[in-house]
Image 1: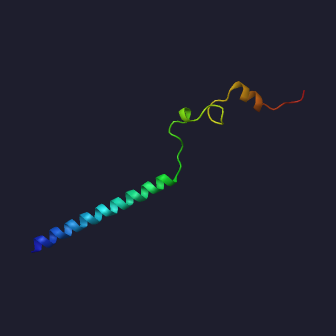
Image 2: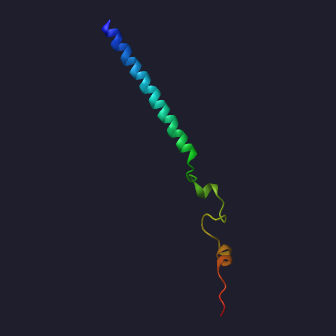
Length: 69
């Protein structure tokens, strides 16, 4: 009889551990989904000239300040 109670207690602890790990993983996934990380491949997804990447010669000329001389 003691063996049966011991096995039931071990099985109950295993089930409780599985539920705890499952809930912690779900909570962790929710935190990751709520936080926006950068795009994994910004050079592929973002077209050049939209504030990301290297500026073109025209963009550089447009940004230059005119100085009076």
